Length: 286
View 1 (cartoon, rainbow, N blue to C red):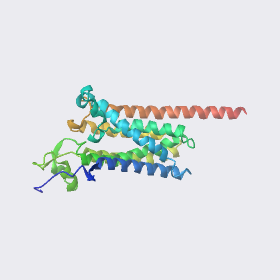
View 2: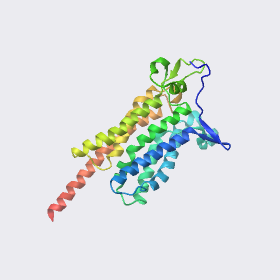
View 3: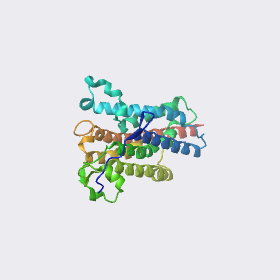
View 4: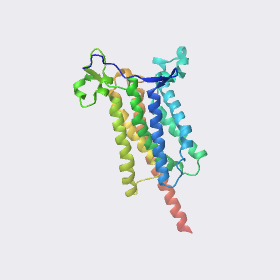
């Protein structure tokens, strides 16, 4: 074992300005989601820049939502009225992906409804929302550099299949490098990637093949899959990284994601079938 073991730096400095790897990675993940969304839209005949306006508004909205959800969940432990100014110190860390997804998606849909009227908003949802999982896969590596979102302490040998640059960053105590924190950020990233591939390359094609697909289902599938991932992993977190109460605000939100996803899909199908039947009835009367 390297006797001079140390953690990787959290960022770098340019002309006295501190640039965090976390911020760069989050931005890169968002840009990748933008590219994938634009690619899907382009395949259906829309312009490559269709989602640019959506991104310009949805991305910062997502950051705001992520911060708000973190502040709400950690209000008593980290903030409070006596430390109100800390709310705005976003550069010190403290973003919750679930809040970012909620506000970011909401803002994106509103942009399509009011500013980009050349596409059905539900179609835009299917083009873009599953790609958020890819952004989250990449974004979790920001937690790697920040040394956060880890599980319980285990023996290093139990994760020896991982490269040393990951294991060294997971070391719980640099004076005792034989023990590491479980890299939940990596586990979640892998599960999110599987979720993305499942939605885009299995669920969508299968549902379309069997006439069980309705435009707009992508949001529901995203909420169910991501909610399932978080509900499984949240109880495995190191208590240091659990937001809110002992139960965990993120765990509660994960369950709500699953419930909302199911409700949205069922509602979408009921409304779509109702409209289809009405359309057929009107056509038969002519």
